[in-house]
Each structure stands twice: as structure tokens, then as C-alpha cells.
Amino acid sequence: MKLIVANFKMNLLIKDIHNYLEVIEQKLNKDQVIFCPNNLHIKYFSEKNYLVGSQDISFQEYGAITGDTSINQLKEVGITYTIIGHSERRQYFLDNKYINKKVKLALSKQIKIILCIGENLKVFEENNTFSVLKDQLDNALKDNLNYINETNLIIAYEPIWSIGTGKIPTNSCLEKTILNIKTYLKETYNLNLKVLYGGSVNLDNIDSLQEVSEIDGYLVGSLSLDPNKFLTLINKINN
Ligand code: PEP
Image 1 (tube, rainbow, N blue to C red):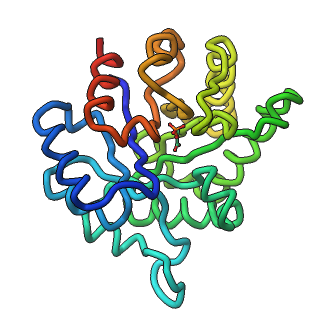
Image 2 (image 1 turned 90 degrees about the vertical axis):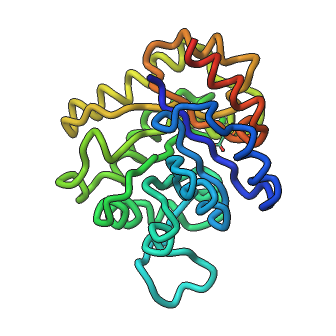
Image 3 (image 1 turned 180 degrees about the vertical axis):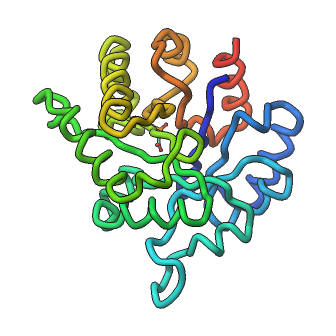
């Protein structure tokens, strides 16, 4: 079964969430899909026993960080997962600096991690993708290895130039990059981790993406905002 993560980013209002929940009611496998709505909307999904993740966590457990949300507060409303290192957090905030701390904190609180890694277009065009991905993995994993296993860490490979652009890597490129990630994790850290693909997954490209054997699931942004389209996508993935 392929894992599917829905990242709503900073979208939707409470009325949209109620409508969303009505549309998807009894139509999906609750073990397959992890919803990552805005923090204010998490409880609506957890109350109905969906798997829920936050889109980020504060690097600190509590204290004087105005505007941030702590992992304890997020656990209280029902997350069991968190995304860490999404490229939008790396771009607009100081996430590169805090990813290792966030990974450590999530592991210590038994929250499962969806770790996003990905290269920008310049790196891709210069054929340096793997060295960037390796650095991002090393940065997240160092000093955390004793606590990481196949069940609490999932990698999401998201080329930055694919997010929200409609452009995706070719199948052969994806097959190679994801295999490289898996091989590196196995050989260097003795970890067999699931690797998801994220970046402009939509109803037109999903059939082709399904041919990439190394993809263990998908992280879906904008398409997941429409519950009907999202259900159609899930059906395509499962058939
Ligand atoms: C994302 O937010 O990680 C993402 C993959 O977005 P989109 O599907 O819109 O490209």
C-alpha cells in the first residue's frame, strides 16, 4: 500500500474543512493517508480518527518563541506525524539550522517524521542533486541515529523546482534519485526507509509516476485541497 501525505499548507477555512470531511467520509483507508492541515484545523481530522501530521514543529519544546507551536501542543490536538524540512520552511524561515534539533525533539516525543529533502533547479541542472540530498540527510540524521528506525522516519523527496510548478523529473531520473537515496541510507546508516515523491503530483501525471517502482508513496500539495480530486487521485494510486 502506498502512503499518501496531504499538505494543505496555509489554505482552507474551518467551513472548508467541515465540507472536506463530509466529502471524504468513509471513502478512504484511514491507515493510508496522513492529513497535514493548518495547526488550527488538526483537531477536526484527529477527532474523526484520521492520521494527522503538523506541517512543522517548533525546535524548542516550550518557552519564549512568539508565534511558534510546540510539539506538546500539537500532540495535544492529535498529531502522530510531523513534516520537517519542507522547502518552504527552509526558504522563508531558518529551518536548515534547526532541522537536526527538530528531528531529535520529534523522536523524543514519539512523533513520526516526514523529512523533506530536495534540490533547487540550479543544482539539478548542474547534476549535483545527490550531493545536496546527502548533505540534507546527514544534517537531519547526525546524532539522532540511535532513535531512528523504519517506522518513525519517512523521507519525502521533493525537488524544489517541482513544487507547485507542474514540472516533474522524468521517470528514469526519479527511479535513479530515489534508489540513490535508499542505497545511501542503507549503506551509511543501515536504514531501510520509505521514500515518497512530492512535487506537482496531479491527475494527469499520476499514472506515469506509478510506473516508478522505487516510489513508496506521495506527498501531495495543491491537489489535496480539493477532496473530490484527492479521492480520485487515491483511487488511481490504488488501482
Ligand atoms: C508540497 O507542498 O510539498 C507539494 C508537493 O506541493 P504541490 O503538490 O502543490 O507541488
